[in-house]
Length: 232
Image 1: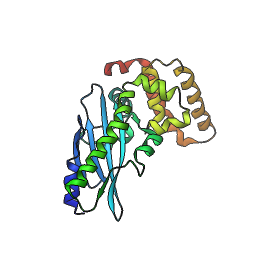
Image 2: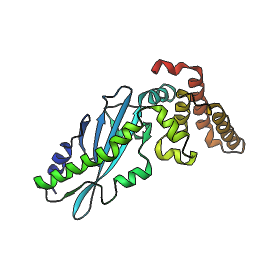
Image 3: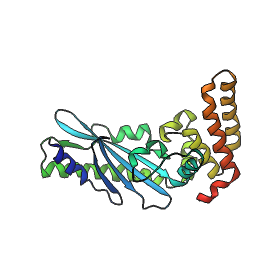
Image 4: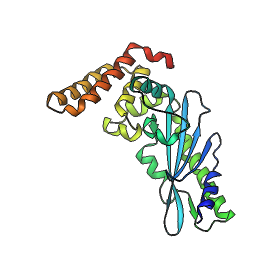
C-alpha cells in the first residue's frame, strides 16, 4: 500500500463532532478531537498497525475533564495544549480501561483495510470505525458524562489496584482531585493513609519518593485551600 493512499484514507476518517488531525507518521496513527462539550475534551487515537495482508487499527479513547487538568497545570506546571494531542495522553482524566480496549480491538471488531485499496474496502473500513464508535465509544462517553460518574463507578467501586487502568498518568493526584471536587466523604481518610504510606517509605530510606511526596503536598494543599474553584 502506498503511503499517500494510506494517508488519504486516514485523513478522511470522519466521526461526527470530532476534528481529524490527520495522518501522523511520527506517532503511527491519527488523532480525532472533540472540544464541543463544555469543560470536557474527548480524544480518539487510531493506532495504525500492519501485517503482510492488511492494515488494522487499534482504537484508544481518552476523556479530559478540563478542570482536573487545569488544577494539575496550576500546581505542577504540566504542559497541556490541545493543538498537540499526542503530548497529553498521560494528562487525560480517564481512558476506556483494559477490558473495553481489548473488546474493541479484538480481531473480530478492529477495523481492517486491505493493502490493495478499493472504494469498497475503504467503505467497509469506515463503516467498521462508525460501528465501533456507536457501539462502544459513544456509550462510554455518555456514561462518564461528569466527574461524579468517575467518582461513583471507578473510585468507589473499583479496587485501588485497578484505578491506573482507567486513570492514566498521575493517577493518585487525579483521584484526590476528583474526590475533592465530588465531595467524597472518604477523601480525608484516604489522603491521610496514603500520605502516611509515602512518609513511611521515605523514613525507611526510599529517598526517591521525596519529590513525589512534595508534589503530593502541593496538590492537596491547593485543593484543600479551595483555590481550585476559579476553574469551575
